[in-house]
Length: 281
Image 1: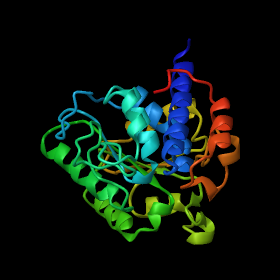
Image 2: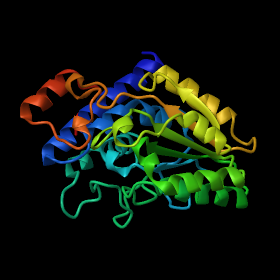
Image 3: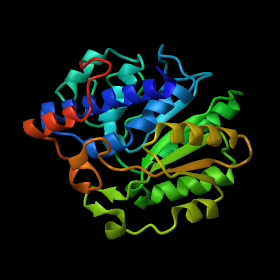
Image 4: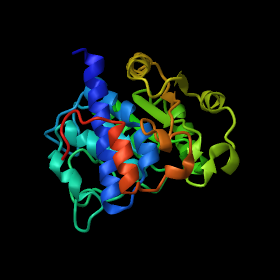
């Protein structure tokens, strides 16, 4: 089996997990989670250097910060299948007094989660602090972040972008899930953001685009290219063009599944489109 096929199988299982987790509690955010399944799979299975012997200081490790915390289902699934905690714990998603809350939290000590996120717009600021700490400690590891495109409507993101460029935080790679959808409709209808590439560049960032953001090989190539651009005086941005709800045909290309759980029939259809590969929890 090729490495690409292994990563595709991993992604397929992650999609199954997302559907089952959200369905079980009739709550959660499947759309963006499905759209980012390939990206987080590649990031954790192919690109980042880390230890599953988790510690909050993350010394000599690459660190990831999920800013758009509502897509926690994909995050939890990838962390579990990457060895941070037992896969069977995915069955506790969004239940009372469990570690897998609807938005990631830190007070329960879930391995892999470094910040509580879900209040949109804050992840980049935290990541910049972590990136500067790496530099102060002589640690050459990288900081990765993921943001929703609708999240960029928060002003704090742009303040953080300006700071990162001004302070030459060049060990930071921030990815924007550029699917054009948010909870109330398309981003163009809610708050048009114009030319994001030009805006990031105007703020002093080095920007690259992954046009096929649900293609594993394209993501691998894009992340490797992003890594090659670090250490050159500028923070790096990836505009990742994804499809919301990717892999489940009736969820794709619409904001309707941003925060809506499938019913029993819809779950069966979605699972049928994603055959089990690693074993369900």
